[in-house]
Image 1 (tube, helix red, strand yellow):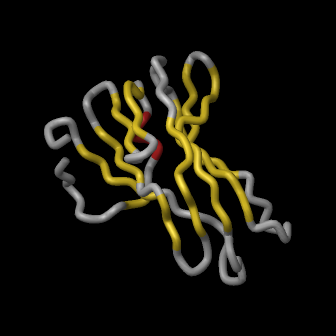
Image 2 (cartoon, one colour):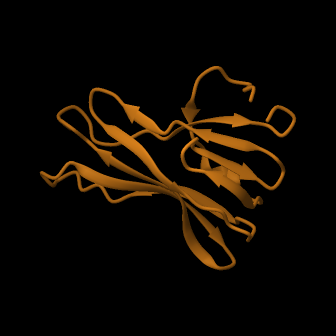
Image 3 (cartoon, one colour):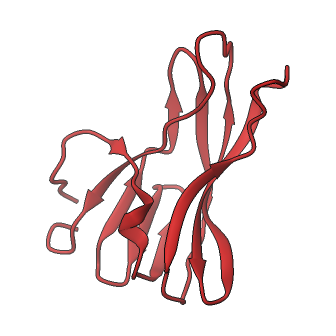
Length: 125
């Protein structure tokens, strides 16, 4: 699979709007959209201040009308573990389509996470 970008970039959920997710591969971290676009997520991200691991991917046969990223991290808590997910809104309601677990580790400098992906257009997938 060739990529138009050499490195993973911050994932923008807007690429999902108007599409369906027809296939997933959690081990490889890929979602395949109905137009043939493949989104390849970085499955584990570690830096000085956080850790994020992809845990599950889901398909949807409904057209996605909106999408975003949510998390349940409590920055005021001493518990540094959290869950994050990419959600899609369809005619069936809101659904988590990408799920991840994280840990803010020290959290001294910053709390949060990055979800990175490479986008492979249909003609390059």
